[in-house]
Length: 117
Image (tube, rainbow, N blue to C red):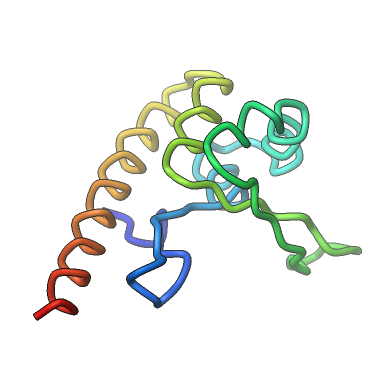
């Protein structure tokens, strides 16, 4: 499994949730980051039904300017991939992302349980 696909958004386990981001999704799906962020911007209200659509700017390699990268929670990720094409590589990574969201939720639960001991 690719642990870098999904991470916790904070080290504070009482507030942490599993997230991924638009750059990781575009890289794994083999599509341009711009096409992913266009979907996120076009359907922003849809994505915000599942929480704030968090974003940050990052200077990418070989980029002439900063790029807006969006963090997505699990539900936002599922919504995004339903809006994307179902290519062979997309189906492969949908499976990996689903596994990693499940893994990270279990990891977070274990950390929370350990914290209460």
